[in-house]
Amino acid sequence: MTWGSLILAGLRIILALITGANNRKLIQAGEDKKMAQTALQILEATEEGKKIREHIRALSDSEADDLWDRMTDA
Image 1: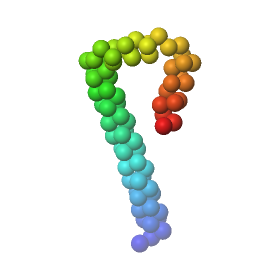
Image 2: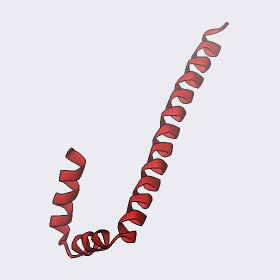
Image 3: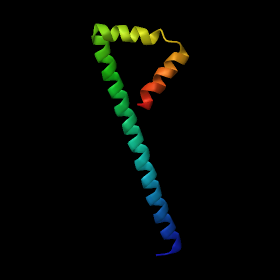
Image 4: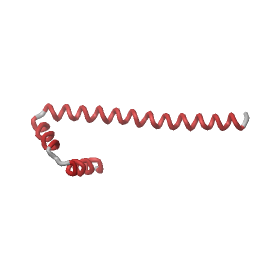
């Protein structure tokens, strides 16, 4: 093998690792979105869920950001 072919093989391996990592991120994002959609459907199907949704809609941007920060820190 020549140095050029070794470097090319190394670059192909790095590209495959990066592509795999990006694909995993995209799959996880899709799963997270689906989970959020399902949770929203459940909330909308219940009376308490509707009350919670209305409360969230009434939040100011800063209150919503604070709530999001508390939810994601857990």
